[in-house]
Length: 96
Image 1 (cartoon, rainbow, N blue to C red):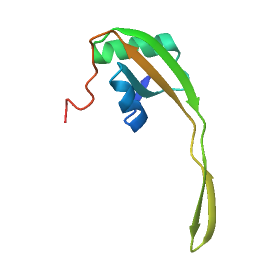
Image 2: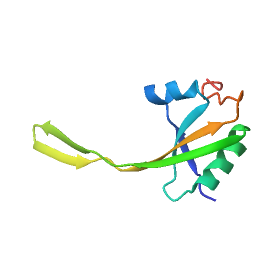
Image 3: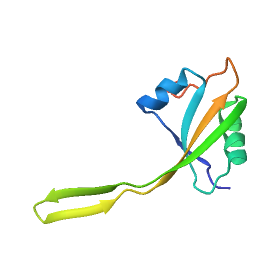
Image 4: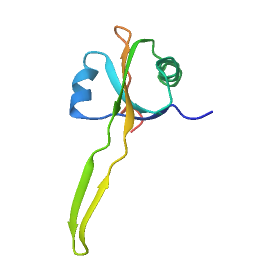
């Protein structure tokens, strides 16, 4: 079985959402909302009320090097914003 949850999102925007009981994850592109909900509940032991997903498009990047201009693109990925039940939290920093 493939891993649905790739990594938690730790950004300023998602940190603000954490206070409202919402958590962000980078997930497998082929995963649907039901699979994401089950994976979060199994891994973190919380009750998930709602899952919102979006695909973040890749961005074009340009670097100026000695060898000339190098252009490329970052890959796109799928994000999931998960809302947990009232009073429950997910602690990403507990194992540090």
